[in-house]
Image 1 (cartoon, rainbow, N blue to C red):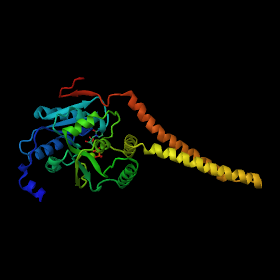
Image 2 (image 1 turned 30 degrees about the horizontal axis):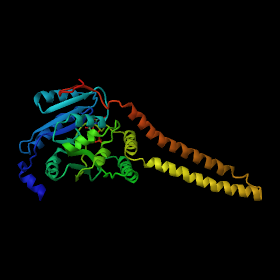
Image 3 (image 1 turned 120 degrees about the vertical axis):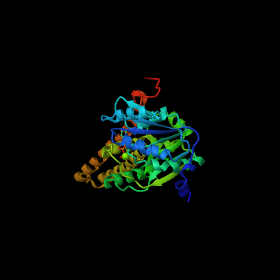
Image 4 (image 1 turned 90 degrees about the vertical axis):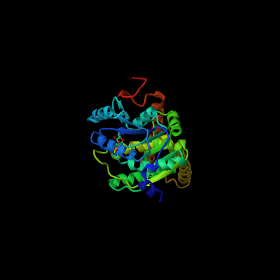
Length: 327
Ligand code: UDP
Ligand code: MG
């Protein structure tokens, strides 16, 4: 009902203040003009929209930056920030948040997989909340292996973390200024934005939509890249793996105590404990494997501490068409 009324009379939707759309781009030369056209067309559905588009060129090696410069000369609402190299989407989104001036802020992928057509509905919804988030209800057009691991990832993450993560949640969100300010106040250098959204809380409404394929260009994610991303998720928002490691350690200690008593008694009473080489080797292999695995988990957290203590800047800006103090 509510959707129909927007479609019939699109100019019904409006918002007060400035809207900043943040668009991280890595090698998106084909997508930038298409995204821009599409976005502008959506904005035309609002009453007097006041907006800026902040493109973050995340170390592209193609004509992305040239495209952005061209757009910026045509349209002063187009801003760009170009990094000195590829720092990753998380860093790009952080830079976007930092330099967005909007009262409303949204992150949107350049490939139109975060459909700008949802914006009208999102602005309707945000009238009664602080944050409108999106999730994909389907994973069609995605390789099955990737979908499988993605599902597994959310199951395990929710099991291990006190925060609840919605499966298929996108980075695509519309937020009020206060949410962005709180996210910026979070001090960590290693940023996992999906977790940070959950951590800051605020009243959030969800919108579901069907997955749509990338319009042009290629995905920047490999399966290995996604694997590393999930390790980041676990270590940033859960310390449960550390607790599991301790419990497993303790359980094996108790088990070995029982075994020691059993073997000692058998030796004392029957003098026949010297068999079972095969089983001994199996147990040895298993336990040393387990120990290394647990050390690895602890190592992951240690590496986080190591990186955090260095307090390196999350990105370096090479050039931009907005005022940046460090330039
Ligand atoms: N992206 C980026 N830096 C990177 C990788 C990706 O800014 O190192 C951008 C990319 O240009 C796109 C968005 O992040 O606008 C999402 O990337 P992609 O479409 O490759 O991810 P997928 O949709 O396949 O998860
Ligand atoms: Mg994409």
